Length: 226
Image (cartoon, rainbow, N blue to C red):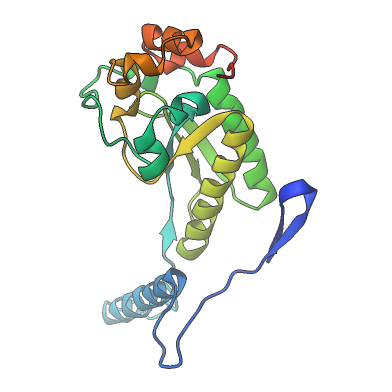
C-alpha cells in the first residue's frame, strides 16, 4: 500500500488488489501474471531437478521494462483530432526510416523534455520506482525511461506507475505524453503541411515551429498560449 498526492494536495491511499471469481477465474490482469510467474517457477525447478540440480528450490522471473513515449506541446496536440481521440497518429506522412534522425537519437535531450523527465524521475523515486536510464529515442520527440531489472510482477506495477506519473508531470509542463503505440509519423505530420493551413494561420508561434521542422529546435523556446 502507498500514498499519492491527489487534487488540491489531498492524499490518496492505493491498495493493490486482485479479483477472482467464485470458480477461480481471473477477473483482472495481475492474477494472470501471478499465475504465469508461478507456472514458470514450478516447471523450471522441475526441469532443473531432472538435470541434476537438486539444490534449486525456486526460479524467479525478472523484467526490465523500457517505457518509450512521445512528448508533444499541448497546443500542437490540440490541433490533432486523431491524437486527442485515438491517442495515436492516424493520418500524415510516413515515419522516417534508416538513420535520417540520428542527430536526434544521439543528441542531447531537449531542455523541456529533460525538465519533464527529471521531475517524473523524482516522483517515481517517491513511489519506490527505481528509474535507471533516460535518453532520446529514434523518432523526433520520442524518449525513453527505464528502471532497473526487478521481479516481473513488481516491474509491471512500476511501469504502470511510471506511465501515470509521466502524464501528470507533462501536463504541468504544458506538454502531452503519448504512450502505448508507435506514432513515429506524428512529428512528420505536424511539419509537412498535412494540417490545414487555415488552422494555423494567425498563430505565428505554431507557424514558426512548422518552418523549423524540428521539435528539438523549438523545444528550447518558451511555450506560448494560443
